[in-house]
Amino acid sequence: MSNTRISDIVNAAAVQLACAGVEDPHLDVRVLVGHALGLAPEEVLNSAGRVLAGKEMDFIGALIDRRERRETLNRIIGKGEFCGLWFALNEATLEPRPESEIIVRAILKKVKTIFWCFRSHKPLRVLDLGTGSGCILLSFLHALPNATGLGIDLAPRAVEQARENAKRLGLEKRCEFRINNWNAGIEEKFDIVSFNPPYIPLSDKPKLMRAVRDYDPPLALYGGEDGLDPYRVVVPALPGLIKKGGYAGIELGDEQTQAVGLLLKQAGFTDIELSIDFRGFDRVFVVRQNGRKNI
Image 1 (cartoon, helix red, strand yellow):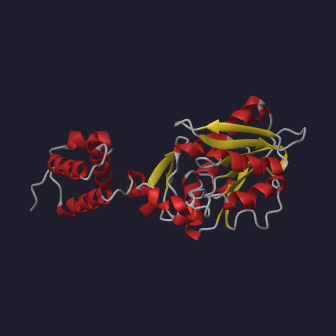
Image 2: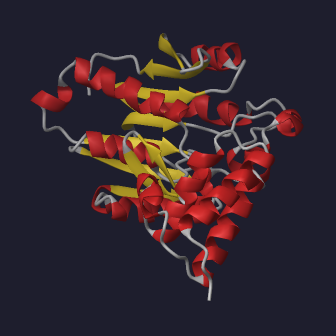
Image 3: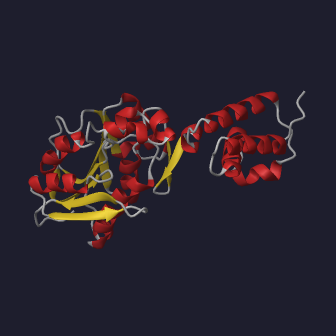
C-alpha cells in the first residue's frame, strides 16, 4: 500500500519539470495534479497530506511525463480558455490563442459602437472559416444573442469537437458546423465573417517551438511554402460572403501584413483597419463591406 502523499509527488514532479527546463514547474505541477484529482490548483497544497492511491500516482506520473516532453498544459488537460469561455480540445484542434481573441473583440467593438446589439432585434449571421474548436464563432454567439452562425473546417474531428463545445455552452441550436474546403459552395452572405487560416510557412517548421511542432495539428498550422495559400483562396471571395455594411476579421502571421493587405485591396476593400497583438505585432485586419446598410 502506498504512503505517498500529495506533497511528496508535487515536490518530486516539480524537480522533474525544472530539470527539463519547464519555465514554471511548480504552477504546472499544481495544475496537473489538480486535474488528476479533481482539485483546483490552489486546493492542491491545502491537501498536501492526503495519501494517494496507486492509480492516482500512475495517472499523475503520466501527465507529468507529457509536460516534460513539452506538451502544453491546455492540450494535456484537454481544454483552453478563450474570451472568458472554456473550450474542449482534441488532436485536430489548435489551442485557443489570445491573439485570435482580437478578431472577436475588434468586431464586437464595431458592432457596439453603432449600438446595434442594444437597439435592434435583427437576426445576425456569422461565418467562421477554419473554425477548429469553434471558439471564435461560439464567442460571437455568446456575446450576440440575436446571432446564428456557420462554422467551417476541413478536419472532421475538429467539426466534431466544435459541435460538442456548442452543446456544452448551450449554443447548439444557434449554429451549424460543416466539413468543407474554405468557402467552396457557400452562396449565403453574412454580417460577420471570421477567417483564421493556417499561415505558417512550411520553411519555418524547423524553427517552431517543440510544443507547436510536435503537438499541434499540421493541417491547422501550415499555409503552403510562404504561408499565404489560404489567403489567395479566400480573400478574393470575401466580397461575395459579406453583406453590405458587414465586417470580416482576418488573422495574419508575422511579416504578412503587406501581402494580405494587398490581397484585400485587390478584392476591392477600402475600409481596412489593422490591429496589433499583445506583443506589438500586426495580427488582425478588420474590413467592412462597402455600402450604407449597417448590421
